[in-house]
Length: 323
Image 1 (cartoon, rainbow, N blue to C red):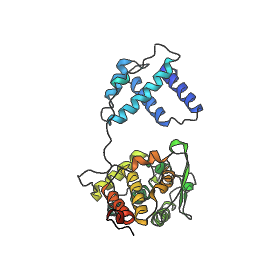
Image 2 (image 1 turned 30 degrees about the vertical axis):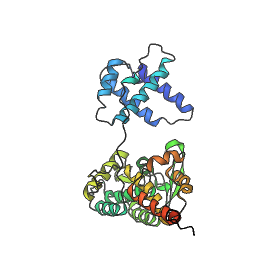
Image 3 (image 1 turned 90 degrees about the vertical axis):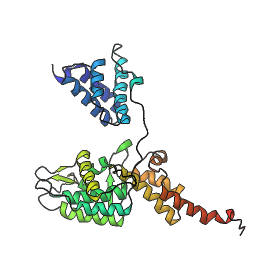
Image 4 (image 1 turned 60 degrees about the vertical axis):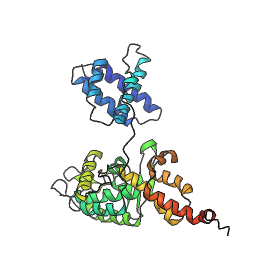
């Protein structure tokens, strides 16, 4: 029997087709369900049932509890869909799913940390297959810190998406089906142009749809999120960037750092921070500021500068000065 003829694979294909006709991408759902199908097939199981599901769950124990719960939820939603036409279909018991736990506090990186990371990028070893690796890592650090890009958005950038003259990136059809243009800072614009001087030289492909972050010369392949993430974690290690309690940053912490730095900058400029939040949400590709608020956890640096702003505006009232 061919893989496509298996009941599970047929049901997965039908489920994804229906969901996508409703305008949903379901990229992560497809990845999880395909992985589950492959897992069961390697164990000679043609369909999903209780024992196979429990075995698959045990294979995910290395993942964070919230990540596991998310993947199990994807499978449960799929099974609930199947049950509409297959009453005897197996449906996982949600009460046995891992409980949601608070996520780790992000490590907020400052300008001095980024300076060390840029220096560390130049010490990354290049190879015959990846001669641009130091330049790629330097640009990745710059763009992630100064634009708050998601790592998936960064690796999907093509040469056509990077306007080197205007200093603008075009992020196409990202999360929530949103596309956006990101004007770069002066420093990030300069770093992009410096990188493109190397990237556009032979033997690298300069076709508009070629990846901006080029990895392998013989195939002109771009980076995948996992590969770029490994390189960035190597930079964290070389630069010895850590939090005050000794924790090493995660790559996604750079997105948190971008949002926090934007707020600090507005406070220093005396801007109305509340009115600026929709702009930050738009720049980060969020549907609303409610999503952006996830990246704006209270930190000591912002508490201090906010207190200073409050004192400058209203301190005379507390001191009893009526003037």
